[in-house]
Length: 483
Image (cartoon, rainbow, N blue to C red; front, side, top):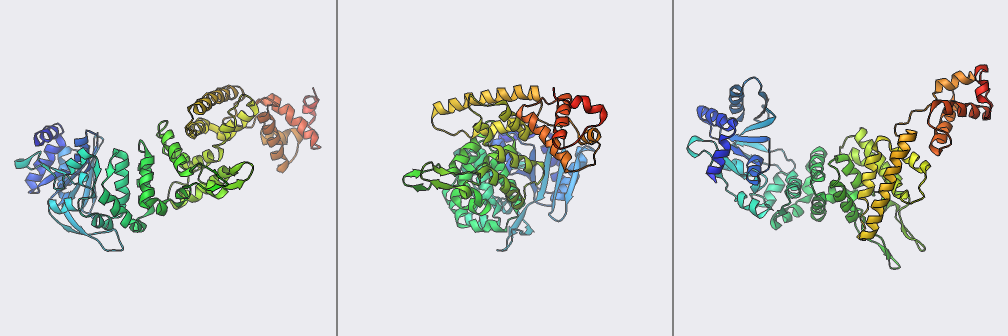
């Protein structure tokens, strides 16, 4: 395997430069971590970590000089690390070190160490492999924990006893599940038991770091696998209790409802086959989040969840704030989709009206296509005929959306008559009545009573004004007569 690595290293000049510089400084240097893992897995990677037995900052500084003016060097003295951005790659440099931790903190006490010390502190065996850049052993794989074998067996395992690894840095529990989800690997049983045993340690990790790992799980090909690992380990209860509340089926008089936790995971997997939009995937996670709070039993109809879409939309800002997710347009986008997610399903019949389509397009705006994507993902029936029927009906709705929008242009609705025009027509001062008139015009357009065009809306406005006891100016009187 060393010959294979040697040939790869020779194909990229950064390795020969680091090798030459490390020799001149007297610092043995190695490629380590994720790049080595991805090289064996034949996965592309533009992040390369280098470790040296010496000063990583000195090594990076000299390498940057060799790369020339296009290399952008960043030095982090407090951490003893440095990074170089060059030609779309990011190179990180650190001196080999050993670490010790206090019980209440994930911030280690760091000392200079050997390569072996550095590999001992790594999170998983598959991330502890190194390739030598020293002249006498160039291209040699240094794999003290058999990480390459774990790659072949598709296993996530800690290099040291799991309790030590996870207690030292509890974020590694989430990283274990994230890597298992991304790589389609299993978490080795003792390692998974270590997560269960130390689950409470996650409380010392910042919410930002937790959400970063959670988003990486959500962006995987099949995030349901990661969420099930989070659930069974106990981590999900601590980091996302609302989602755990979805789990379970209650029965009364032999009548039960579907397990909304597993339904949500199916919707999430479904939508991942349609989009890589992180926030659309979040809308899949949250679309039924308020069902437990709205769950009621009625003897005639069984279980109901009336208003769960409205309550869920109200919860979105609270959940985003607690999880340190963005509180900007991305949050409002998720909130909108959660609120509207039942709307297209209510339209999937042959009698759907243009008015209903207009209202949905008006409320969804530019996100109407994403709303339809969410609704398609929400069909999780195991009955293929039912799924086929829904898919055919959704196509009809999408066709209607295109027709109505082309004709009525309500997706990005701009009132065809402005408040200034109302003031001018009736010679009145700004007041609540102006807003009321504009709203009546909007409702008439959405109902299909008038077209979304200025002339027709203006005539309608004059009629509304008369109803409110307003008299148009002389020059508008002829237009206000009933036709």
